Length: 392
Ligand SMILES: *Cc1c(COP(=O)(O)O)cnc(C)c1O
Image (cartoon, rainbow, N blue to C red; front, side):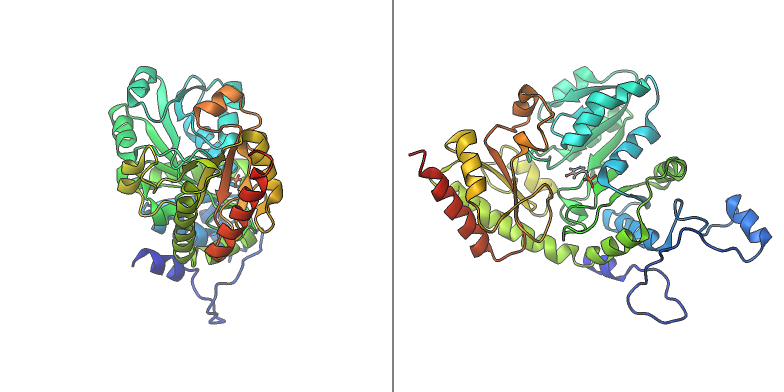
């Protein structure tokens, strides 16, 4: 089956009620036919549902879809994207191990590495995603994992998955990719030797700004380890959220097509706008990693970033002058959202570290939604023109 068909047709086995849409299974536990079945399920001799912290049919449907869409053996779903990131670190790293991580990372992942992992004796080094020579210098005998994000949030840096995969193979590292911005519809990291794919399902997978969720996908042995860790630590996804997310995946392909179409139109419009200093979008030829982006992604994704000519002050005027666009912390919604990473998601990252990954003080991130492109461009154009009045 093709991507779109799998996203729609994988579903929980039909019940005696012959329902067409999948029901939700809001139950914390499951009943056993007899004591022997209970014993053998607990012993792992028989597979089946026991307790929703371990497995639940609604959650399982979502997991099986993620695994099928990423073309890997299995997946485990979590309550948020950060729960997925944390579970990956905690499952595969122990005291004395070392991680290499791209410095172009989501703010909370960056903070987790920078401020928390040392509590468990886990060491790390940040690497510049664009200089693989530096990766070779920083890899150590105790390095266990390479963790990257491409395109990165919010800098939209593109990392060459093929090179990163080869590097991980050469050094026998567990290669983890946060595939949140691309989704499996635009990019399948497993084709480049990725061992573990992490998702925040809160973003494009839900795509409608309703629920939070996360997922970890990979080969059977690795996902089994993650499942075993999560079974005793409890980051399980709720059945209701899983049901919403599984339904959302049915429309992922059509939504992503429109997100990408609107985003490239907006990026091209901004490139020619007199108030704009710089536009960043992976499928613009001016993007520094354009060649890599077109090699590993089928379209450029739903995020565009730009800088206004008048710096931070004009950026703030711009955000306040918008009439339709939402000022909100989410992304990957039907609604177009503008954010200012330097004062929000990346406020806890030092200015020096922010600048290294392209998060300048005037950077504005647009998560391009599904409204009509003329309305999106109209609102941004108006707000840019209004914000310029004080600066020219
Ligand atoms: C949002 C996000 C996360 C975290 O996901 P939550 O669902 O908010 O916990 C991780 N990685 C990336 C790239 C994100 O954008």
